[in-house]
Length: 301
Length: 284
Image 1 (cartoon, chains in turn red, brown):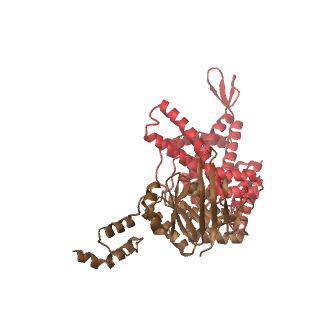
Image 2: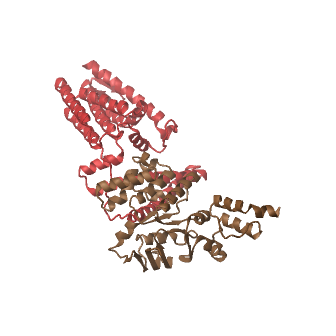
Image 3: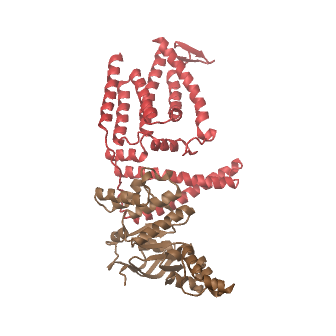
């Protein structure tokens, strides 16, 4: 068992390094952006995740099924609290997203790299502790005290990481295959308050308009040396912010006019396509859940 | 005599800051008319459209739709039957998929879901955008967005369709597509209003031209009447359509017999010139 723990810890260390490197190389904001894909935006991860959802080959699956499947997997991951179950979930979700959804492996890792970075940073805080006297199994003197850890702590850290990672990949499976509008419609069916749903819909639509406007303004500022030095960029940033507010107000008015002219009377009623539920998929999902419980049954202590 | 659909009388509208946008505007719109609304920026065209649709409430003046005076109660009927395709499609598209956008109007009309479905499919097919019905609007090009915004009006099946500067910001191909749609709708007898700065488009498409200047209608007549009226053109800062100018030039220099045919398209112009070939060769 100790060997597993030590190997696991080494794996964590390697992944920390890897994801640090990864972050630098893959993050489009820092490394510029490539044009390998048709729709490539250079303003943030959120946009590309949104695009992957539309490009996904399992987009036609019933959204309610996808959302509930991923939620149940998430709940099972946490409830069963078992590293083998977690590993199985990680593998299965990667399989669904990459093989079924046809998302390139590289893109999948790129999307996962963001939460991984945060997980790893928090795991470091969990597996290491600080003490004045050497108390743990492994101690690292740093002058005025010791940073220490033990096999038990490493084990907790590793298991926790696997669990969080599994939960996240279950959620990623959902976000990478279900367009936001469909997720919102599922929430609506789940009786989330109407106001929240309307807001979510409008915010989702609006984010892209704001991004577009701000990108245009930024380009316009750039072309007139608006970002030539620190002082200028500060004032440009402020001006763009102020302008965005004014434009938002104007756009909100224009929007309202356009909605009113089409008989909008205070209630946002949505028209959406009904996607048939595939019975085979439900059976497969059921088998998957049972498998998780069987794995848990044979491996839990 | 064609039946009057909409009767606008003495419409007066001022913005919150007191700036008068419309002053004493009166106009009758008849069934099946194709009206071009012209005038410089800020002359009140868009405000007029929004008043016609009941989005803006006029200070005084009345709008009568099919013999019923428009009041708060009958406002919905007016909005249902008059659709506006806004100038900037981005300001019109409110939902996060094309399908939902086209279904927005019908859903607000509280139609049964089967009917909504039918109308959406019909409008999507009409505008030839069935391929990207599931796409969100931010992954569409300008021309595609325009088509979506037109489809979202068509699905409401309005009696009058208003196009607010539809050709602005469209490339030649999409502008051609738009004119084809206009022609198709025209052949189905739809009543249409279209605001534009393109005199050539107005000349060849419209049956009637309204000219706005500083919140007033300064001229109302057939394209020929309007575009031959030099003082009006000057006042509204409009220029003469190229084909009309050419025709007049040829007639003036006695290269063409004045048959008062006034060709409106290049094809028709060519036919006129060819018919007068004898006259031309006589000169030689």
